[in-house]
Amino acid sequence: MATHGEASEERISEIDYEFLPELSALLGVDAVQLAKSQEEEEHQERLKMKTGFNSHMRSEAKRLKTFVTYDTFRSWTPQDMAASGFYFTGVKLGVQCFCCSLILFGTSLRKTPIESHRRFRPGCEFLLGKDIGNIGKYDIRVKSPEKLRGGKARYQEEEARLESFENWPFYAHGTSPRVLSAAGFVFTAHELWTGGCGAPMGLD
Image 1 (tube, rainbow, N blue to C red):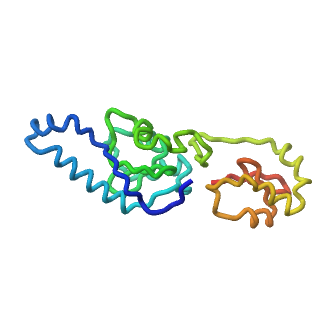
Image 2: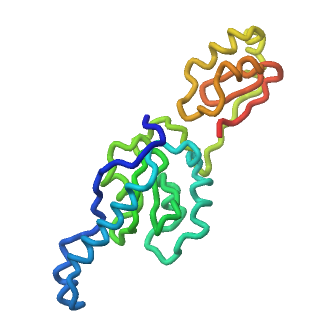
Image 3: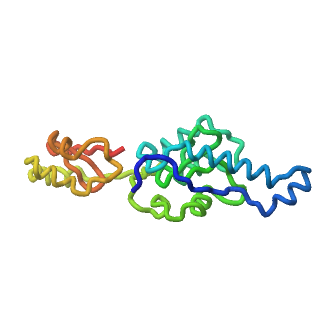
């Protein structure tokens, strides 16, 4: 999984050039030249932006909150964009995927956000449904406290707690497993919980 870094040189063409000659004749301007100029401007903006996995935007609810200042007169809704992995960057009308860092400046009338996402980044791990830490708007996990408490005896030793972090997800990189296990925490697949009382904690 890529880390947060500098933008790539990748060029993305969001404009459908097929209809531009007709548009040029209708408006009396060179629509093709205008489109190329717009694409170059957007490419330069992309080069300035950070890319890579953005763990701060794994939550769909957080992504949705970024659209508070977004222009509402667009063909895509903030809800659809957030559900498709995008958050508003604040740069022009740019939206960016938290996982593959695809940046789009336009909204298609013909395609939904998820379709446009697939068109430009079919290999995005978010789109492929891989465990990249996405927290869906309605993602609720409930575990039986009895099950958790039943296994707490084996986690009395710090070494046993540290071993529970073997599959610690890459997106939960804020605190090291060694520090957490020393503080009495245990990791169980998708949740962090205290070895003493078995109280679960989220990973966001």
